Length: 422
Ligand SMILES: *Cc1c(COP(=O)(O)O)cnc(C)c1O
Image (cartoon, rainbow, N blue to C red; front, side, top):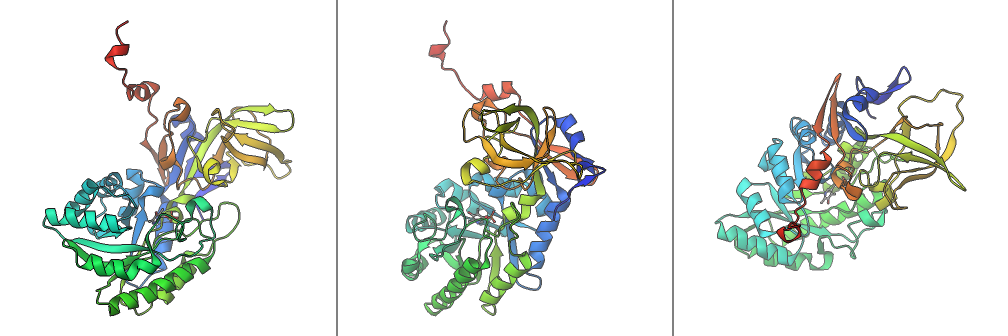
């Protein structure tokens, strides 16, 4: 459920007309709904009511400070994957004690920043990484709280590019080596083993892979305890899917039930790292139709948004529902069109043969479910300025990241003096 609805035939974000925002900000732009963000965070958290659970928003899904701050005020923790994200989470008001640090390629200075901040946990993904972390922590006279991310070798049954829990993926430590790796790590200076971590992929629409992975983790926790490790933390990652194309994924409540059943009476703190589920449906990308072009074989609707603004369709075959800002009347006949952007690549296609109400140049459309992995993955390809972001709350809205000017964009480049003397 979200708070983007038609009122009197016009799309609103909460109590604000989307067309009004477009008039003020220009298109394309991302628009987020506070009420939707809050609702999703609460629904997810409520699935663990009464359990000892920490919900760490996966900052990589949407790292705007205003978005993180909205969640911080509800008590969210953060899952970060870089020093930059750590800085964002702290700046947005998330206490270090609720921050976990994931990722396969942490650098020493990133570890140092996280140790000095006093984060809750490092999710370590390899033996070389634990040795570097041990060195950094020892040098600082500190102790790093550690969980290893384990690779349970389960098929998440999601898109190959966002599947992370198979033995062939780069993530986590191999299942057959877990016991040895924990044993060796426990002897390293500056390391305090406290947990187990797993994250098998993103946009999962089936509970079975979660159930399999969680039960494997449960067995592992019992085994590691027998081997003498004090396991107090189990991080079950993120990955619960959202409805993009009409497929209804399991509810947070049933996901929670699977997690709690698998972890029941282990007596650990559970950590969750949802990203997409919190922000996905809380955002839309608003764009204007530039041209409608009749090709030799098909009709093209050419938008002012492009793959550099929203790359999910080009990168993962991601589906986004596309709505016109003016609601179609009941008797309108839908027409098939390819919806494309202006970037000079055939990959810059949002949808093929999509049935849409008839649109004309100047009309506004909204890509639904664009709040996760949208703005954060935007680039300036084709020298298009980064797309701005707007946050709505009730009848208020504010630009939470402005569109840079072309001059600002060009100023990022440097022309060497040797090119400058004529
Ligand atoms: C990407 C990621 C998440 C968030 O995944 P969602 O599918 O957005 O919930 C959580 N944990 C880790 C380690 C990740 O890499």
